[in-house]
Picture 1 (cartoon, one colour):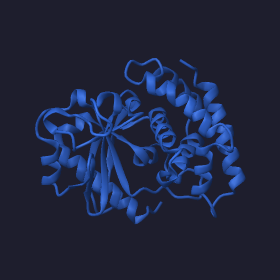
Picture 2 (cartoon, rainbow, N blue to C red):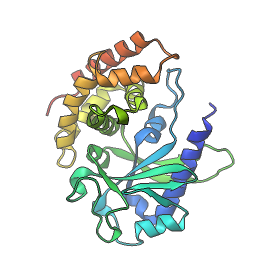
Picture 3 (cartoon, helix red, strand yellow):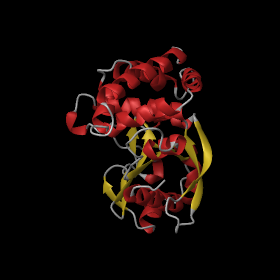
Picture 4 (tube, one colour):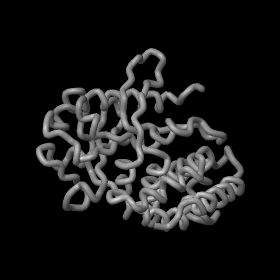
Length: 267
C-alpha cells in the first residue's frame, strides 16, 4: 500500500535517530504508533495508518555512559525542540522516553547520569515495553532509502498498557486529547489475538518491573474502552468521523475490550 508522505518522513527521521544512537540502540525499545503499525499494518479500517513522529523508550539500566546522547543526536543534525526529551530533524519530532519508575526523582525530566536531565522525559506505562518486546529489522518506507536497523519493538500487550496510561493521563485535559490514540488501541483490538494479548498482560501484571503499571492499566482500559461511551471509545469514534459509522466503531470498542478483559486475568 502507498504510505502517507508524512509517515514516510517520520520513518526516515526515526532511522536517522537510530543511526545516531549507535551502540545505545541496545537500550532502546520502539513504542508508539510506529510500533503499533509494524504489528497490525493497515488493518480493516478506512483510516490509513498515519503518524508524523516517533517514540523511543530508553532502558536506563543498560544505557552506556558514552557517547553522550545529546552530543550524538546533535552531531546527526537533531535539535532539542522541547525540553525535556523532544528532538527534531526536518520538522519531524522524536521523543526519547524513560519509564517513570526508572527515571529518577522529579516530575518530567529523566535523570540519566552523565547524559543529563534534558535528553529524555519520563512517561508512565512504558515499563511494560522493557519486558514485552522483540527485536526486528526496521526498514525505511521510501523505496529509495535502503537503510534498516535491528531494534527492539514493544509487543502489543505493552503497547496497550502504554496507550491506556497516555489516554488516562490526558482524559481530563481536552486540550491534550489526540483522537488517534483511541483509534490506535482499536487497531490493536481488531487485529490481535486477544487471548494471547490477555495472557501476556496477565504475565506482565506479576512482573517486578511492569506489574504495577499493568495492574493500574487494567482499570483504565475497562473504563476507557469497555463501554461504548468510554473516553477511549469516543476518541476512536472521533478519529474516524466521515469514514466509519460511529455506532459501529463504539460497539466494536466495547465488544473487543470485553473480550480482552476476559482473557486479562487480574493480578
